[in-house]
Image (tube, rainbow, N blue to C red; front, side, top):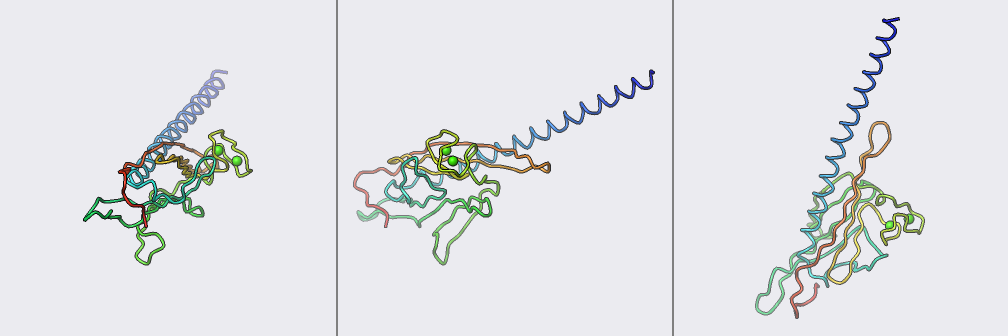
Length: 190
Ligand SMILES: [Ca+2]
Ligand SMILES: [Ca+2]
């Protein structure tokens, strides 16, 4: 009798430890993916906030949105002329679930840097059906979604890590940044 009770007790203790360990692992993974999502969003924000609003391509009002954004940063004025940096792009490479930053996109000397490999196919709560499932004003938006209103660039991002048991750990972040280069009379990007 005592032996049987002890055995049951031991099984219960073991399963409690299993659950605790699993929860701790999940917490660690969640913290890690949350940190990466914030970091990538910050990188995108810093990249695009120096751009000129007229250089943004495409220039899309919600509910239209796009998983890539081309922009140009103006470096200043020399002899009355605006000096533009090379065109840059931040985009989702869908097949690879990557976000990359590109200097001189589509050019022979294009440089690309991958900022994350964990982008979800669609933003959290969204499925491709022509409807705004997650109620954020965008329809069928991808795991990276830009929409633009004037000089304000809205960006949303969902990262997703699929665990061994097939379930996913996700993190969704969003922010709005304003283009700083608003000086009157400056030329537009070529
Ligand atoms: Ca939506
Ligand atoms: Ca949808």
